[in-house]
Image (cartoon, rainbow, N blue to C red; front, side, top):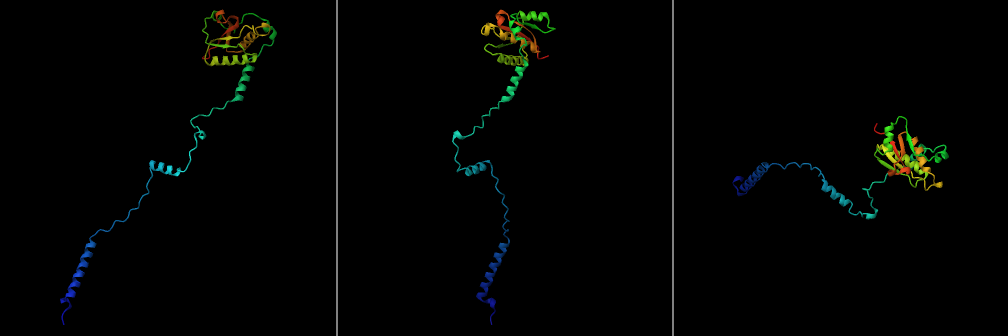
Length: 222
């Protein structure tokens, strides 16, 4: 009996087994595939955000120009009407008419007033026009109440702006009833009630004469 190793079939089997062993050794030398790394979510940049927004509002219909709100135009501030009315009433109450009005109208003398302590030289300078007139109020066409409010507001503004010498034009009364200087005498009485008024006198002819009065005010900076 012959041995199996000497047969052609046995030699082929050994050769096939050798190929399998070589293949296994080659596979053993190959590094294994790396483990899959977890993927991080992609962060959208400004461009991606704009693109997403455009896609989201793709079906939106724009409003016509007439229905758009004008955000650049500022709303007007509310007018404090009651506050203004209260201030106007305070100005009216601050200047009262003279008690003996008939006697005041009857006097046709020159307007002149000086508080105690005002130097004579200062009054002489006021009469001669030595003070520079820094402001003017024209009361032509005003009623009595309108003139009273206007004069009070004018004096307040002059004190805020530190105007020492101003002129008030009251007219000569030619257009009033009986051609009497009603407004002229009211202005004189109103000016005497204001503490900031140091003195006043009739204006020079070139500054209005009997139709105007020049007023000397306190300095608001002291």
